[in-house]
Length: 345
Image (cartoon, rainbow, N blue to C red; front, side, top):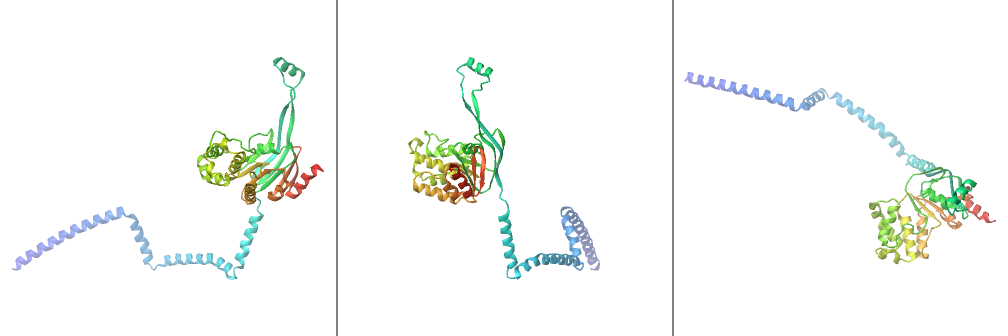
């Protein structure tokens, strides 16, 4: 019995030894795989060792962070303790600083010259043209319209340009809208200009009101997507919702003017240019236009050419008087209006 027991125990020891060797091999293989696949864990273990060694390093870092937090919070607490007086003063200073900042210049006009050729004698044929050339007859005279005009327009400013007929006001607006080009001088424009110089320009009477809205938008440089966003506002302001699918030739002159005017003022440009047109249509629509222009102060840049000094005094932030192609006066609307009225004694 003792031998059998011994043999069984020896077999047990040998089998357990073999199983232990196998498990050691498997464990060593797993360890190698773990070390290969997860090198981050090894780093984390090293970090954990530093944490277990008294935790001094981590506590020290936490203390420095807490100190930095205290230093960041203290100035804010200092501001809010004295009944909020310091914070109120800071807000007032910021408001004053913003108010004192010079507004952005959106239009710069420097030393602008423009002239037109007025024909005086036409050559009836080639022979007459050659004779005129030998005689030194040009057949035209130079009419200088603008002579060194310079001014600035600031962002959100409503500026009025006044002057007698033939002084160069409309020519100046066409130069700003890039319809004409100057012979000398420089114009810098920052933003999108929406010109409304002549009523109904760009309208096609054979197209519907809806098609003419998109046609005018394309002429002004707006994409189809941009006009889709503006369309409802334009039609609502013109009060022509039920007539938009009718042809323009069936519109009355007042309806055409209202549609053109609505496109100009409701198109979302940066700078609006108006030539002697501030309100159109009947009395109710004119009141609507006047209310709209009164709401534009500081919201949009507007350049208005007009002969109405009442509109200059009512709407404009600044005015410019042009006389004989030059800037004769510039400044407050009241002063410029008086200078304009003195031209007729």
